[in-house]
Amino acid sequence: MHLLVNGAAHDLRATTLSQALDALGYRQAIVATALNGIFVPADRRETTTLADGDALEILAPMQGG
Image (cartoon, rainbow, N blue to C red; front, top):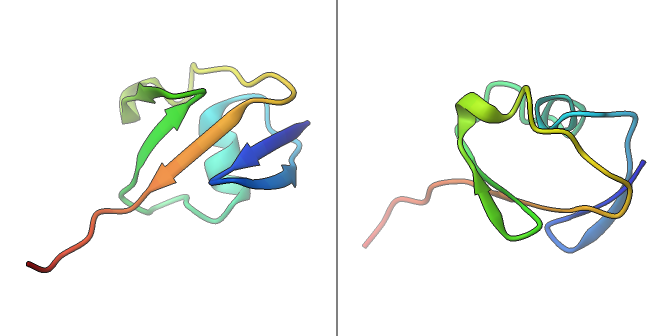
């Protein structure tokens, strides 16, 4: 499946958002996710399905001031 992840093209064998995060190395990371511009809460990632061409944004929290 072809996905656009944070603006970069990726080919993944994932069918859910949770599987995509695992494949991209975010298994245990604390991140925020958006699929096609819509926020996806962590508890919905396992049931959120992906489609070819979807745009996924993965954001990690930052500290500082």
